[in-house]
Image (cartoon, rainbow, N blue to C red; front, side, top):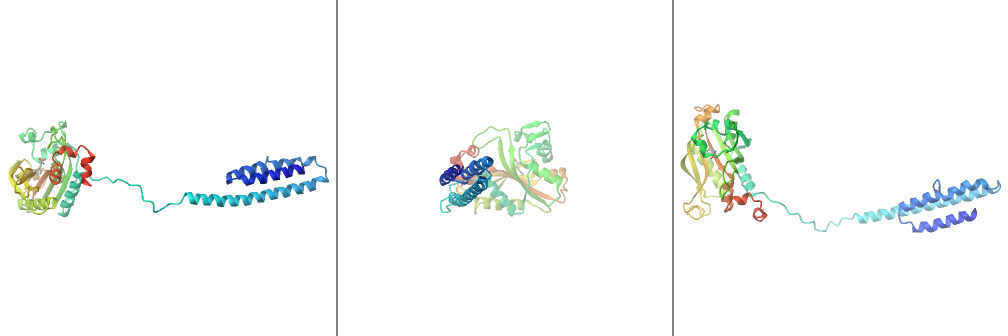
Length: 340
Ligand code: PHE
């Protein structure tokens, strides 16, 4: 029995030298000292010894067990230290390594211009209001003095959802929505997507974007409209840009104007962009038709107002000299990357 014990012990010491981690150590402990371990089974064999031998053997077995246990404990402490050191080494972060390059995206040129517009008009006290793209005929046409069967409806090739619902043809229905629900003074802009049954070409798309402006208050005049648009033109395109009003017709404004801006490509001298005229046609505007005010529940003897509407595509094309509107929709990175 003593022989056996010695063998177990030597074997154990030998194996302990080869143990590399705490897991393997635990395996070894179970194999030797565990419930079904080698040493335990020897203890069980004690019954076969003579009563004189038993205490002596018992003592030896216990001593052996104590020795093995303390060997395991100290091995465990060393291994734990070793594993901790390894982990710390593995988890080291070298803060001097340059980070992987991330390519940042950029705003779409139309969003750049839209953000500019919102900033410019916010600076003049306008609030931004949005409305639905699928709109009632009532707001898109009726309240804007475009009754059913009115010939002026022909100017906007409309997508009808049903008899009373359309894809809005302009952002003007937002002004009708605001006028019917708020009291003056009103000073809003409404940017958004609009729809017309147009074929795609260099200057047309069935889906495009507009921004509408509306001011209603006491004593609002055409001069306020002109001053507002001059300020807008200079802030967007630079000093020296002015507006030119040409008489026009919109059912919802009276008088109405087609508004041109100084051609920013040539400064008004005349060039290819402005076809030699020095002017670029950019927007429609006018004094809100008193009939529209009345239909929307605003007393036209007390209040007056102006409205204007323009295409964001057109503003963008002019700002960045884009030769064809379709570039704005094609998501060609070679085009979009130029606006970083
Ligand atoms: N809603 C008009 C259009 O889309 C533009 C406009 C707005 C004209 C406001 C005058 C006043 O053609």
